[in-house]
Image 1 (cartoon, rainbow, N blue to C red):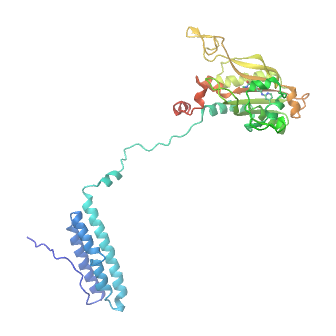
Image 2 (image 1 turned 180 degrees about the horizontal axis):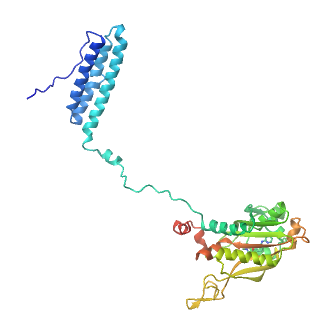
Image 3 (image 1 turned 120 degrees about the vertical axis):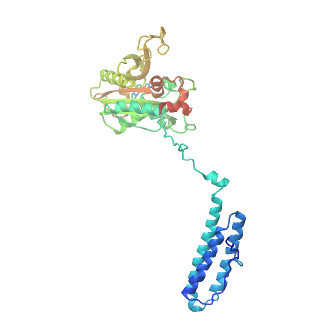
Length: 377
Ligand code: 2NL
């Protein structure tokens, strides 16, 4: 049976400050430190161990300072100082690693909380997607870009001049009443033409384009427009339009028909037919509404043995307005109406998106419900 060494280590004075003597005394200290460390098994024992070695008053390290360093002759101070510093590090590391060893077995609540379950799924950062209105608007614009049209944008707050007067709506003309305009307040002190309003269509962008570009012009103008309409399943005070304009020499109604027939086939499929129905707009003469053959019943007017509700059994759906630009409009932008001619058209983006995607309420586009929107991602 081996006799247990339980006589605690204490620092003794150095009588000899030679490197050999320092080395020997240091080894004794470290082997005592390691032996004591091994005998520690509980946190309470460890605290006593830590304090015995590291307490500021009467700890082993403090005694090293007092008995070795302070008493060392001037010539040895440097060596002894370095040695004491090394021993301090050694003691601190051993005290730390002793605690780690005794805690290693049973993990604490904090250890549990910090554990990482590598089998859990990662955190998803879903990508956003284009809003169905933006998507439809871009799709319409790209049909025309492929025909050589450029895209122009302009302000949503417009003057009476660009929204009405230059588009051949004379002051006080009843055609203005059809636009349900939202006016900016307190503009009465300005001349009528400078008064501000929320644009009711994107046509002002085409006027601005013609002011800065000479013919030939091929332009599409997508954007947000505003009308004083009460919201319901088919109306919203904010909606979107794409308008287009082509001005050149010898542009005819035939060009208008061919262009829009192509655009409707590109948007709704090559089997779609178009027809042009007489209509009125102040800025075009003649004017037409464009109807496409019903995409729900294939133009038959009946479906599943009954009337097609989408075209009210007519086989046709009205989709956009168009016409040959009224010569009066050219007068406002210094185009020579004897030399040039052109056509223009305008379509509601929501109406096209509703038909393309089978949406039954325009309000869904503006409510921001992700369950609706993610279907278009
Ligand atoms: C519709 C009808 C239309 C235009 C817009 C236009 C623009 C200029 C000159 C002539 Cl600068 N016309 N735009 C022409 C015909 C119809 O829109 O129902 N839009 C939803």
